[in-house]
Length: 258
Image (tube, rainbow, N blue to C red):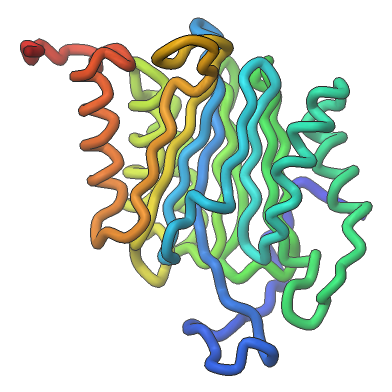
């Protein structure tokens, strides 16, 4: 039976990638957050990991529909399928359970479905997340308390304080959703983050026709693929977007724009 979060009795995997990739899987520790702003209708997510170009596989989002994060022992097909099921009117809980339960588990020795970590948020801010019992420890997820709308999840983390700190930062940060998502990543990193360190980060925010140019639903799509401080660089890019008037400035920011 699928449950929302299983954080005990987990198995350990090697701390580095095996030279023989047929013998063992690649540990892909990651922490991410999905969030919704009821005032603007924007939906988004942000992620950080000690792997190269984490943004290529974790986050999926569609304006007016929702967003997903798939990580740990990853099946990247979960993301697009989540968006399609949300379009059909399923709740985040129904989406997560449907996709996980229908997973044929094609490679249980190296990429077992028991190690998947999967979170979904819909266009109303409802959330649901699953952490499999074989996601590499520490692994778990936590959602925001009302009236906030978010879910934070991670694996190969320093401990539960990582997701606790992510949620706390998201809840108390003011301003545009981009600042809240980055603040959540900063909170997770300050609590220990990915036990292996940092390398890449990404952020996406969507809203119907809210992006630059015509018929663009992408408010922001930012990706830091290889950087010793990817969250710091992601913060710089968010602030650059504010300078370019793509998003509002942070509260209290009186910097003049040229």
